Length: 600
Image 1 (tube, rainbow, N blue to C red):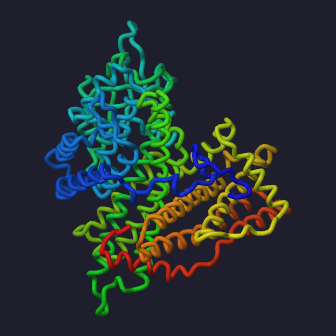
Image 2: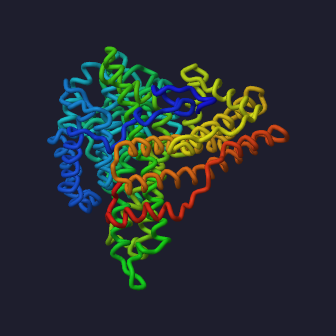
Image 3: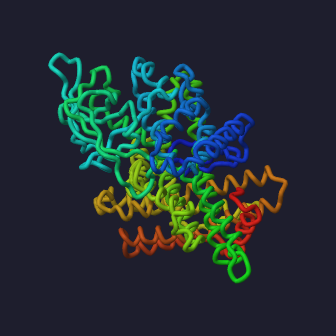
């Protein structure tokens, strides 16, 4: 933003709202290097040679297939790509790991045990384990000898994780703890060898433990009969006087929340990546069916209503894809700078994920909701055949639904997005007040409209104005709260309005930066025309969404002259020119139809 934003390409978590970035600051998947391409090809071969032929067997949990596939991944080194070499990992950079998850996205319910083992099942030990714990467990988790599970949720504690009732009591001689309680919805529990378990030490100190499967008193419930992700082993885990050595306490007593929440940051990011990878495959399924299905003597892909669906699928995916690779690179830069300064590998990864917790929460919501839209429209394009279990659309429809629930429901992640932003501002980690005040002064002066310059001038101005709207709305609400006239904790609808605008801002700017970067890389005008079309449609629709979210929020807490002034500001900052979205979407659909697959 030329008049209210600080120019700085080095962003901290949440600063995308107040600082501008340049195309050269981001990473896009079109610029992967030779080593990353080799990794991508290897994962692609594993997916289509080993996983996809066994999808039905995975769903039926036959022949111990999930464990066998995880073992094959271990043989290929794919369980330790994010782990230090000293424990047998390959320590690939964050962007390479993002590429791996992206490629694995179509793996249906196998993505769940894979992500649980490599993410929330391993990262707590890397982040918070002692040297002895890391040496004992990580090499065997990386080479596949051990499989892991993460035990947080209980019948009475889901989103309110700290309300857990599972209890841990220290023995008289201090040698071990006795665990008593139960956990539910535990992924990988049917075959896991190691459980990351959270319990209340002494009844009130939320703490993490490493618990081994063969511990007497640890028992499992039956496999849950779930709507989807049927290939994921999901059971209850019961603890009855389970002895856990005191040396297996993970992190500090009473600091289990740090483990739980920091592990979830990366989990949310990976969930987005796997969702988008799966969504790309779903578009391929949709366009291939649309090209093959003949009605009224022509393929249904020739119909405008179908082209709308195909194009909108692509636009939503491309926007989230742009943001997730941008955030991947931000985390990678943070990790590399910390390691260069002498920070240990695991701690650097932990701090980077914590720094960009806001962006990870946003991406979890955006990725899972984009996937839901794509899967739903793929099924719709198939018509009656989409409702049949003979094809893949029905399975994908069932499997996708869980993504809006686990790793923190999307409602919780929306609340967290705004809460974390305000907390970072109050701690002085980022300066929201200065830019918000600048927007208020701009409203008071009402200067002449900034002139759009350059090939993407209107788009750049639109993104800057989107940021101003968020700052204006959030700033006004925060001011009323400071004046004692509003309690945002009791106004979840307003928080959701702000969160939705924050999501659109991150996606809009990331998409713009990617399209600008592509314009400097490509010598194919036709391809660039399609990228430009996706950008224009997204900004056109985002303008309407942000305008509505802003108006809904403002009318919820302001009135009289204040409301009129703020609504005038909202109108002023919603000036992206009208777009012929029908024609622009047809350009996008035409590219998909010609390629007969996901081609962006």
